[in-house]
Length: 131
Image (cartoon, rainbow, N blue to C red; front, top):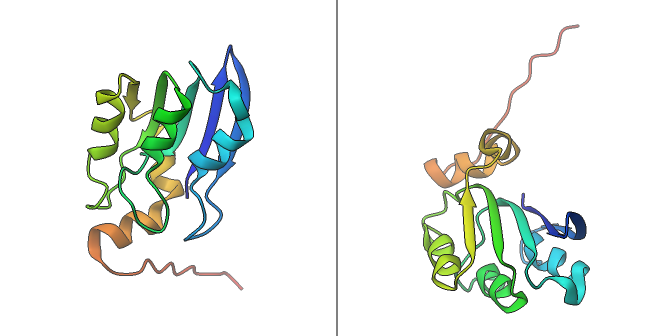
């Protein structure tokens, strides 16, 4: 579950989220929503931007093309394909990157995804209901 905001001059100019597998990621929707005002803006994203080609192109390249100056990341993606390559790619492109902002909240949001990435097993939740 990836959410993204693009902020410029203290105002939210774009927002997006990842609706489902195979669809563009939250970063792409936020950049589209912001339009041409992304240059020198700041992107806030709940999960580290990907830097690989899968079902969608890398979000890192979208940030670089949009000329954002800073990316604030809630948590590092536990997917081994993603590793730290996204952060490295952004920094290599001259973008200021901060990692771990509101990390515990982001981990809670992606609890099932993290479990699956770390164990290879689906996340099951059992709730006991009082009658």
